[in-house]
Length: 369
Image (cartoon, rainbow, N blue to C red):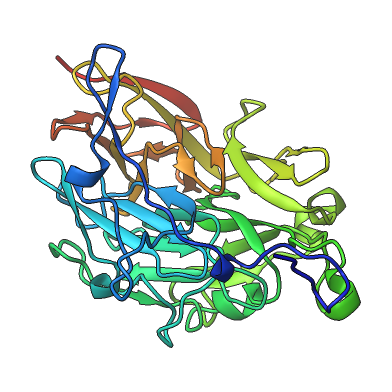
């Protein structure tokens, strides 16, 4: 089969022209071996009308969307509905994306979904799922309307809070939340780049190389909850166009804020050092499990500020697009130079509290016996 942009220029084949595929889930049996439990776990989803494998997957992450202590699975699918696999006691999953409101856009259509992340970006218990979509499709921001419900209900708030119109033009791949300026609010980063080298010849608004997005979180009281930061705020190095794909974050230089590693199709990677000079304080927490997994993947860390605001981070390296982020979690404390408490929710249900302390340091916390 031959694919073209305009009848002559070669192009990538559209996902709609190819069959879907099953996700696979491998259970760690604890002796250096894994068992394929995909079918009995319920993660192999078929299209309702044809019975063939549904997924055309590009992104995946593992938040606990209903607060029951079990990690759920969200799969970002390209041109077919997204999946929300709710984790059930006993190791099975129930697909609930349409019921929960994260399967489609607000018009009931499937989008070209790429990178994905989830976070409590409003510093409440309402988790949000961000998914970067294809060019001319807005980034999705599904916000939970019923925190704690067994099957939560989400609404895509990208248009109402200003995120959607800002992100509509470019093709979004690497996506994740981070508090880039340490003010206590989670911002959103996107690494962008088109698939087609010749796209500008037939669509003047599109370019193969595109600039990354840094969307600053203004807070829920603002008219537009997110604003796109310009080159004046981010630097020419940040705004330089690239064929963006994967993206990661880590405190590379050990100064407490998060730096960015960006990856390109057919080009060199880019390491962007965060040199923000806001005077905001920070705290980093690195967990080591003993009875749970050693890296404490899936653990939730709740930090309470002196004013009572609770900031939540989850140890989850799997996010963005074909990428992994560091294991320590980073909190921006704003102008607070101390924190009131830290509560650790370990995988398996154990909780552990750490006392108040000073900011601007790394805390190494090991799971209590």
